[in-house]
Image 1 (cartoon, rainbow, N blue to C red):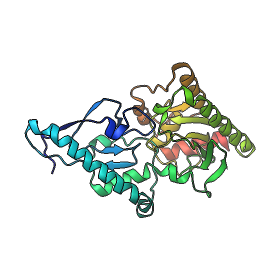
Image 2 (cartoon, rainbow, N blue to C red; image 1 turned 60 degrees about the vertical axis):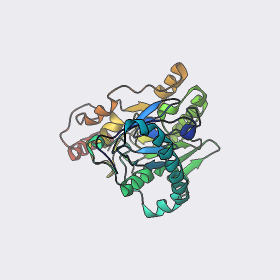
Image 3 (cartoon, rainbow, N blue to C red; image 1 turned 90 degrees about the vertical axis):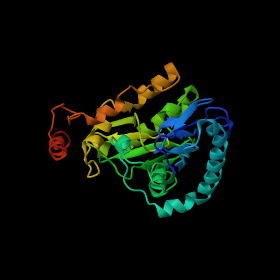
Length: 301
C-alpha cells in the first residue's frame, strides 16, 4: 500500500536500461532515466519500462530507512515479471482499449490529476502508442518506402493533414542525434512531395514541422495545409500547437541536428499553448474558435 511519507530511491542501471542510453529508455512520468541516474519514485508516479510501452504503478511499504535498499531489488524483480506479462497482453489491449482522440500535445492539467489507477494507466499506455498501430494500417497509408510511411492524420486539423513516420524506432525529438540527419532529410523530402502533389487542390500553402512536446510516442513530421478548415480543430490548444513557435519548422529541426547534434526545445514551450487566438495570416486576434474559423474563410475561400 502507498504511504504518504514513503519514497524510495531506485538506481536503474543494467536491469532496466541495459547500462546505456538507447532508443528504448525507461522513465518516471515524462523523465527518461539515463545511465547511473538515481530517480525517486513517489506515490502517484508512473514507471514506464521500454520507451513508455509498459506503464506501472509501484507499491510502497513504510519500512525503516535501513531496509529500503534491500527492498529495491525485490521491487525491480516484481516489475520485470509484470513487464513480461504486459508484453503478452499488449495485442489484447489494442482491442480492449480503443483509441480516443488525442490532442497530440501535453495535458495542461496533468500535474493536478489524481494518481492513476491500473485501468487508467493501461488506457494511457495504449493511446500514447497509437501512432505505432496507425502506421501499420493500410487504410491510412498513402505512401511508404524502406525508410518511412505517410499516413492520414486520424483527426486532421486542416483540409490536408498527413504524418510522415520513420520505420526506425525513435520516440521523440529529444532522441535525435547527428546520425539521424539523413533520415530527417528523407522525411522532409517525402513530406514536400506529398504537399506538392496536392498543392493544386489547396488554396492554402503547406507547412512541415514537429510539435515541440508531443504526447504521442514515435517521432512524426506533420504536413498540414494552412487553411485549418477542419471540425477536428476544436480549441485553443489545437490552434496554438500549429501556429505558434510550439510548431518547430522541419528545416529548423534539421539545422539544429546538423549544427548542435540534437534538438533544443525552449523552456516554457508548453505555455505557448495558452496564447491568445491570433490569425496565422493577418495576425488579427479573435475571441473564440468559431469566430477564428469564420475569419479564416476570408483568406482561403
